[in-house]
Length: 206
Image (tube, rainbow, N blue to C red; front, side, top):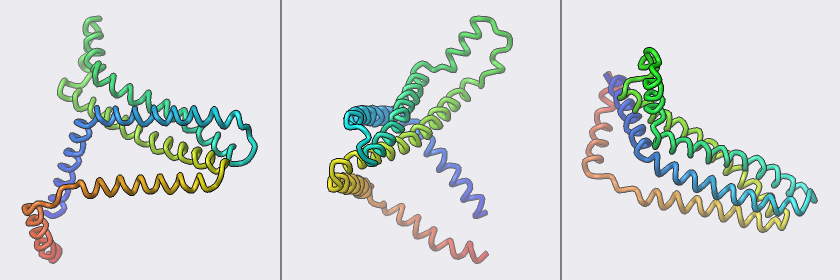
């Protein structure tokens, strides 16, 4: 009974997360495009400066290699997010089905899911593409930060240390704001937690 309740709760939680991601997809695509575009600009500017300096030391080489690796990832992320946005706006599945129907392709409906299933397939495809975009963004951000640190290290190690400390403080502040912005637990939620803690020992005793 307990395992079945937990499985049902997990299934409903996953369903809620999928719906939330679907509702937030336009905003996530917009923010992701802004982030990738900003890193493309930074990479191009810094790479141009490092190329003029030449391979004078190891820090410059590390910076150029890291930023050069991040640049194609940024472009791939922009393209992926653009495809998500355009596929949602154009509704590519419906257009493909209509095109084959107008061409009188035999039994074309068998190759496409039903109308309600196509909507679910579109959401699932968008969620998968967003997950890959998030992985690309993480890799690109890591390479970009490494390239910037190496470039600043070439100027002076103190500049690189100040940059790393500034990034750490910025991330810490963002996490702090996010934690303090969360609403407090309601009385109903606290009561549910008390009931769960009181019921758990009895269920484990069985």
